[in-house]
Image (cartoon, rainbow, N blue to C red; front, side):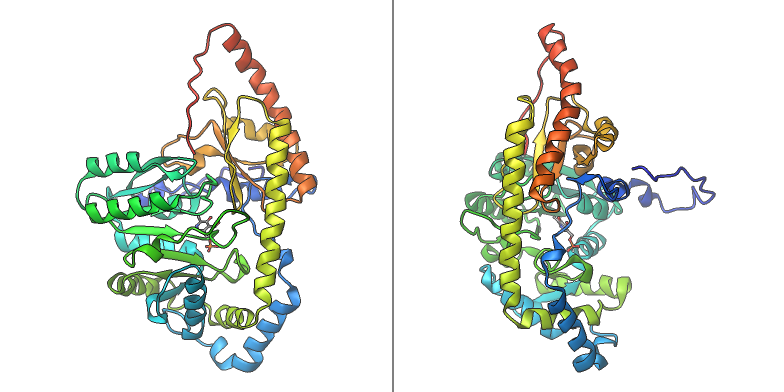
Length: 423
Ligand SMILES: Cc1ncc(COP(=O)(O)O)c(C=O)c1O
C-alpha cells in the first residue's frame, strides 16, 4: 500500500515458475501506510514488545557475549543449542507435551518451520488441507511449492470435522501431504479448536494416514477459559511448531519444531541448505532470558494487556459496527475475524479506510483462491484500547457509506442476501 511502485522487470520470464504463485503478504504491504503517525493500525499482528523489560534482554545479551562469547559468536549445530532445546522441552511440558531435547529443532521463528516443512513435503499438485481462512505466511510458504490447497471452513469450535471428513473421503487414503492447523486462537479466525474436535481430527488423520502440522504461536496467550491440550500432547506423530515471538520477542527470530525422528532428519538436511545453523547469539540470549523466572510475570502482563485490548475491540464492535456484520470472540491471541454480506468488498474499501486513518487486513489474503473478500481481520494486539475504540469508530464510518447502498438494494428487493457463516 502507499509506497508500492510498478517497476519494469527485465528478468521477468527467468524466474522459477513456482515464484509466480507466491503472493505478497497484504499485511507486510500495509506496514508503510500503518507507520503514518495519525494512523491506527488494526492490521499487523505485532506483539507488544515494549512490555518486555529492555534491561532483562540487555542483561541476557550482555551475558551471551561476556560469558558465552566463544559459542554465541560461532557457528553452531543445525538443530540448535542443546541448552535452548532443553528450555523448549520444559516449556512444552508445561502445556502437556512430553518430548526430549533430541526431538527438537530450533528454527528462525515458526515461519522457517513452515518453509522447511513445505520444502520437505511438497511437490507441485500435492494436496494440502488447512483451515479456511488460514495464516497468510503459511499460504506464502506452501504456495512456493505449487500445492493444491484445500480450505476447510470453521465455526465457533474451529475446523469443521464433518467437512474435513468429506474432504478426506474425496482425496482418499494418503491423499494429502499434510493437514495444517492453528488450533489456538487461530490466525486470522480467532477461534479455538475444541477438545473433542482435536481428538476427531487426530482419528481422521490416522485413518487416512496423513501427517498433521500444529502451528501454535498463541497457545500461551489465553485470557479466559481452560487450557486445551495441544494435538501433540494427544499424538506423538503430530508435527508441532512453536515460537518465542509471542512469549518473548519476534526480533530474535527463534522458534522450534518437534516431529517424529525420520521427519526431523529430513528437515535438518533442508535446514542445513537454508542457513547452516540458526543464530547462536539469539539462542544464548533466549536461554539466559528464560533461565530466570521474570519472563513468567512479563508473559502474564502481556496476556493482561492483550485481554484489555480484546475487550476494547469487542465493546467497540458492539457499539459502532453495523448490524450486517458478525465477528468472532477470541479467548486469547491477537485477532478478531469479521464477516459482512457478500456484497461488501473489503479489498476495495481499504484505501478509503486508510484515508480515514485506520488499517485492517482484507480477508481474501487468508485464502488461496480469492475467497474472503467480504471479510476482514482485525488485530487487537498492537494499538492501545482508546486507539482501538477510535479505529473501530473510523472503520464503522467507512462501512456505513458502503452499506447504505447495500440496504437500498435490499429494500428494493434487488439483492439476494447470500451472507453465510464461516469462522
Ligand atoms: C499462525 C502463525 N504461524 C506462524 C507465525 C510466524 O511466527 P514467527 O516466525 O515469528 O515465529 C505467525 C506469526 O504471526 C502466525 O500467526
